[in-house]
Length: 165
Image 1 (cartoon, rainbow, N blue to C red):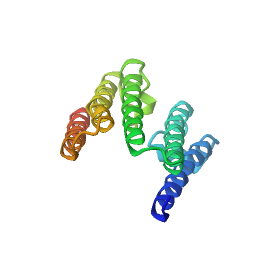
Image 2 (image 1 turned 30 degrees about the vertical axis):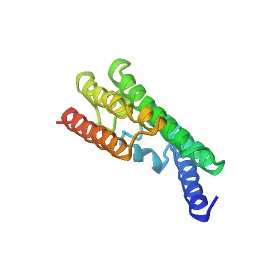
Image 3 (image 1 turned 60 degrees about the horizontal axis):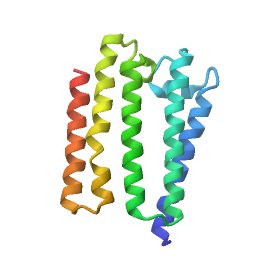
Image 4 (image 1 turned 180 degrees about the horizontal axis):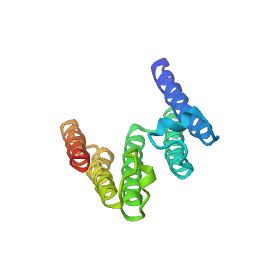
């Protein structure tokens, strides 16, 4: 592994560990980190839910760094990253929309009806990114991969924008 790759893997792992540390620190009552999630610091359920998302993100970053450090092929890393990210978006959106987990939103005091739109937009973001996985796995042209990535990102941006209008 060259120095640039080692540095990138180390920085990714450090960022993941920082996510985990901040999430764990936020679980303490009166922690200043509790406000970082954009929810009411006194709302323990919201803080715990958002801390769980931060821990999952941090663990994912550490796993990515380990995979890069271990020399796993770019094709496997890219496909797995897209699948995990898309699944996380769909799961998060489903939890908000259908399981009424409004505390996962950074929108304060969102009603059930209001929370359904961002939940649906998160699910749509996951589904829009999903076509990247087979494109990466089967070695599609760079133009197709970029087109899918930009299209998914713009579609997700529009979906989130419409959800919060």
